[in-house]
Length: 209
Image 1: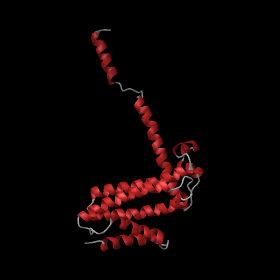
Image 2: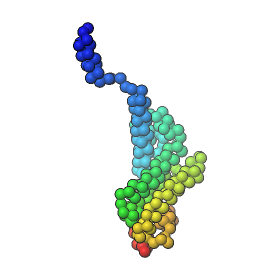
Image 3: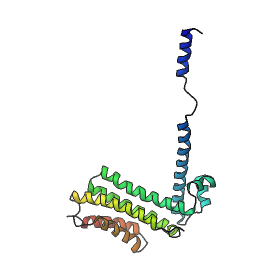
Image 4: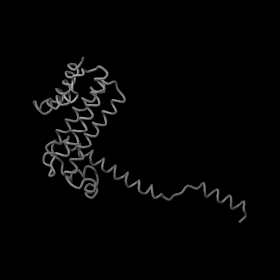
């Protein structure tokens, strides 16, 4: 083979895309598939809770998610693990929304939007509460983590609103959240979400300087 022919062959080889999957790619794909499976399982479990108002069985969750029992139990080794994960996802979404709203909206608007999201979160919590209360390991650790996350979120939003003059300095942001919990869990069950949404307006009007 001449030198010119060798150079041409080398150039063609360089242009030809490799069909071999790198080690990094081969590891990334299973992880991505596993994450999608986990998210699908959580999504269908949440829908099942909302649809029936009763706790779905693990077999039902696997069937609705279209995964095998092995996949389900690899992600959630027990019923308690699934219930805890459902609850933690709701808490994490609500906490993250406080940061997102703070970056995108004015302080008063961000606080109002987040309190409305809090009402939605309380609706989800009411669905999971009977199952949470029967967890073998108890709920103390789960509620401690969620309490800290939500306290941090309302303090972030409330502090911004106070600094902007939207609410008075003597208003404790935590009290706004506790007032809504009172509506959700301390009053009649009928139409509690609508009453809680109205309470958001009452609270923010009453907290004005």
